[in-house]
Image (cartoon, rainbow, N blue to C red; front, side, top):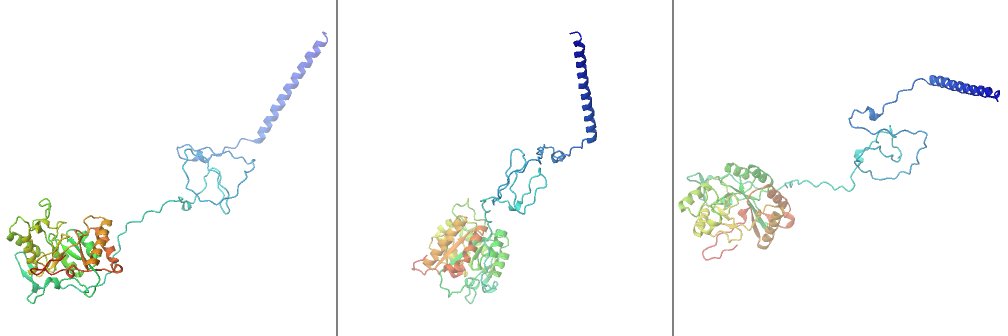
Length: 413
């Protein structure tokens, strides 16, 4: 027993020595292997780390070259849709490969999208712009002669119209051109308050046909120059006549108006001032600033005296009130339709259609426009361009006048 104990101790120490010898050999061999490999290569910076943006970028996906590529389905033609915003950045999904498409240059870079090919499915087309109506070409009419001194006389405020010694009148001398052999229904259009707004006046004079009659406001700052331009356009003219309207004095027709509270000499002086504003017009119309003289017309004797004075000077007179019998002592007529009582496209077109109906029923119709606003001019230009195919004709107001009834003769509309 004592002899066997040293042998077992010796065997234990020998086993422990062999273990440490193996450990030392393994450590020495590992060092030599690492020394042969050399120092580790520096890690290549990713795009997210190199980007200067302060916002954190998603880490690139680990490449796994050993894994086989996933099966790719057959490409399906579809309409590209605009990229939708996502709440969190993520790598773009892999798209099916298409023939002729360039391969992506880097796995962490989103594919390029052709912005010209991205369209919103079912997007409505933009609404058309409200383009002004083009001005049609109108035939050239005969020129209107310059003011004739034989039909003028000197008054307190300037030259006044009169009947020439040979019987010539302003109605015939300065009237617009019209073929009186034309038997189609006739429509006259009067555009009032010309000369107050330079922009509206220029637009109306440039675009409206010459057969339109222009009523120049007596308060226009350059009434004579406007009248001369209209004469060059071969358009006949009227002078606006301020008469006391309904609602006076809240509705004020100006300091040269004919009023019911003034004496006959005062009204006559104001009439002479109005008639001397410029020469070469065919007559007067009782409208200024949208006011049509209802209260003055209700004073019958004064109203008839006004008409008679205009007739004695060779002028016509247009009553601006619709649905009345018309002048009782002057050559002229009343308007049939107020075209811009409500200034809207649909309402103006409806009133123009109403004037055509009246013209076809009675042979003629007369419409009045209070002011040459852009919407009114646009509608008139578009309407006048289609008159030929609708069987009616535009005529100056001097063609549509009626003689005053003789004593005992019934007045007609």
